Image (cartoon, rainbow, N blue to C red; front, side, top):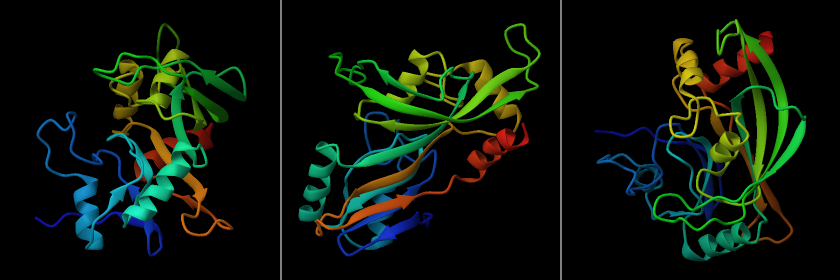
Length: 233
């Protein structure tokens, strides 16, 4: 069966940035649960050569995914990532209205299943828009939601999702760390995905120290439909 090619957002000889759709796992892992469709396999077929994933995105997260085509480029990009020179910006829709327009969460996180040791985790957030929708919740006739932009300064397991849970501003559509009542409300409105999108990547060019690459991925149709609620409020 022919698999769908991923949209290419930026392409050079040694690397590319593609737009990973929500619901597609990046590579095989213990979380795959018998699946056999992975972004890494699609990309090897799509480009017709080996690929090296520079970073990962959760299955339910869409957006910018950086990969290299050779080991030297992968190493250079990986060093930039480890040094904190790669800026990653995400769009997120959460329940509630954060009180501050800009805020930072500094809350240590473990490494996920089987990795109980907690390590520093820092995410910066900016509130972009708010909406009050006619969805009854917790005794109220309406529910409040916000669009956030998030910049994770560290790369812990499901960091943005877990930091939002820590604030009780659960990410919409997150079935692991979210709020089931609000997830169901959005599904009833026709939105069947987790509302986290890797909107932008900015990083030093791996072979030209004078250049910095910046790539933006547009939200998909489901995410755009959710954002439209905020335009109407």
